[in-house]
Length: 180
Image 1 (cartoon, rainbow, N blue to C red):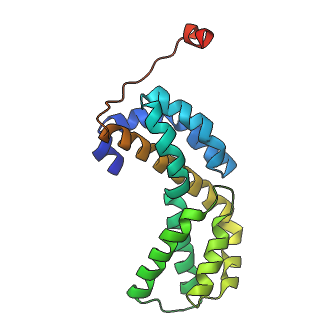
Image 2 (image 1 turned 90 degrees about the vertical axis):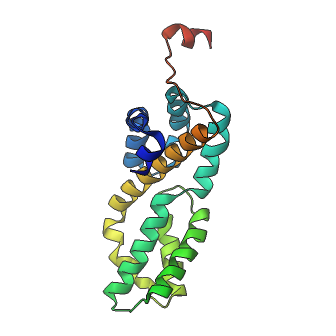
Image 3 (image 1 turned 30 degrees about the vertical axis):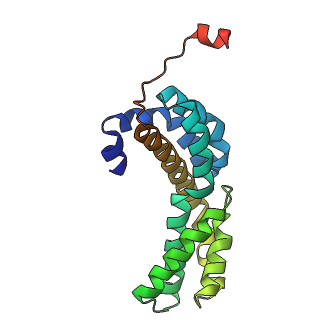
């Protein structure tokens, strides 16, 4: 929805361009694995290379939407399983802590679990509750990686648009590849 507000109908063009990076992120459970392909597809979409080369690496360091949401939901799930009451103030504090700690999470499979364990310890939630999540974490990691890639692609294109550039799809021919 937010992507549609920013890009309008071009959001569907963006999704068409990044479907391969999304599939790679889904299958490898790593957003880092798709970086080169994502750069290539964003250039084909029409985003400026200078915006891509600045915004996308920054997003990989600071814009891990999927990881942050997962860590929050996982921590709250563990608290609920153990019957630990989390007042709204504590939940907001947990959200803020996870917003900060998610900035240092590596884009590799299951890196978020370490942060979940540390967060649980910090808020008096038994960290051994992570064992409840381990059996399904691989599947959650697939979606988390895709969300991270989608968020980074969308933020890069949004910055490109806000910089006054109207992304025009780049069409490459076989001759362009030979001249490069």
